[in-house]
Image 1 (cartoon, rainbow, N blue to C red):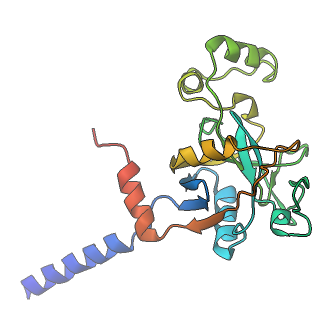
Image 2 (image 1 turned 120 degrees about the vertical axis):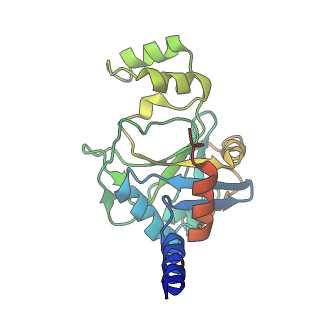
Length: 236
């Protein structure tokens, strides 16, 4: 009887362990320039859950990366870019949207380093995000002197924390966007896709002259658990 109880307890423990959800949700963005995998931040639940909802519906599939600026970012998610009557060659895109916005979720720990996913928005006073449009930062590396100048000018005196300065000078990013646009994820593999798209030939609207379509897929729980394990810091 004791052995049976022990076996039952073991099976229950294993079952609970397998049933435990992954710590993070990951998504894959597929393009003709390669794929990337993005981890959505749990620190920005409104943006995370909205992106998951749209991806589940297939909202992004067939939309374009309609704006690409080298050393800055690539932007996509405009539903108009899927509409052949509105997305003719040379047409300016970026005004399409869903019928809602998302409240800003600024976090001091989340900033515009190279590879982050962030929400586009219009010029609204609350800095609320577009319900669907996003961008991925390519960025560039800054010298300490250039960061000092940014603090005095575009950042209006706001100081960049030392640990963020270290990343902006070594990895790169776009620091002047911090606390203005919500950062809600980051590329964990496939950042070269962003570099390739940012480097393509563009028209006067920064739209790639050859359409860059995307497909956005949510990774399965099993895949997310595997990535959690792979990306988790080693035990001390």
